[in-house]
Image (cartoon, rainbow, N blue to C red; front, side, top):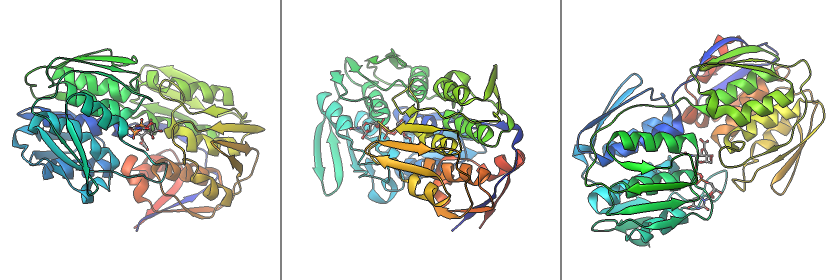
Length: 416
Ligand code: EPU
């Protein structure tokens, strides 16, 4: 298994290009199932999760071609309504096929994703919504089976905003009979990107980016031609890396409007952040101030940036309280960061970080994507060598991370 070796203490400087957003690409590639014909997607990142979704779509009978960052998917071949356990367990987001399969093939059989390292992650709200749209739902042998002759529009309220839940029901509603109103939906940029992609296929979805989405069903959709939005979490990860190493880095090809919460915190930490079009330049502070963080649904501070900020707070001056309100078990990086010398105590959904620690390199491993990213960041400022194991988590969500950090001057390499 690959590992990444980081020698700490280098200042990061220069430009880094941000790729397409994993969490926008996944639902948008799945939305190709809704049209009879070839859809084309550009700026698709080269990630393990993209390989997983391509394998799933191929299994469903559609033809997928990949040339560099362009992916073409011909939804005409859609014939199989089953997403098996072996494919779903590799990537939870596979549950996104449930809505489109039910809408197009009138039935779906999708393995239940189960929990994962960061929490139980139920899909009850996906299922409740589909049932309200008239689908018959059965849970059998670890699979969810949904069927409906034609889904019908419904008024659906989400107890809590869910990103993939919103996306799944949007893709069910676009071909439903009548109007679907989704209330208390997720407002993440990835949800807006999916709505834009669907509308470019002829759907009528209004309100994306607000908490109420109104979708008027249509008879059929046409193929799409879409460019995937930049990855705000990859961008945020590089911004934190620059602040941590007191570097001077320009993040290129990002969308600063999606980074408001992250940039606000970085400025409070003392970093100088300048926005110029689709570029963000950050100059790290001499003294890193501590700030409190509370993760929240967008436009609040993203849970996917919590682990990276914890590293920053572990070398800041002062005490920081980090509250995780989205996932119940998203502090798995804490024990590994402690092995590097971070002073972090967890009580319930809060972590208290006593900063000003000098981190020292060690072998570490993590069981989730963003936790792995935080360990790379810690390695960049730790004294000596940090060896990050189980790199496959990183490869799910960061394209060529070691090459991008090397380009900024980090001493980092992958051992295969
Ligand atoms: N929830 C329910 N019932 C449901 C669905 C969700 O109770 O039916 C709860 C969850 O347990 C959680 C909260 O709602 O407490 C929010 O979860 P959400 O459904 O929004 O998460 P998700 O859609 O499974 C996406 C991203 C995650 C990101 C979260 C939160 C994708 C493919 N994944 O997950 O990304 O952390 O939203 O923003 O879009 C990552 O990229 O590393 C990652 C984990």
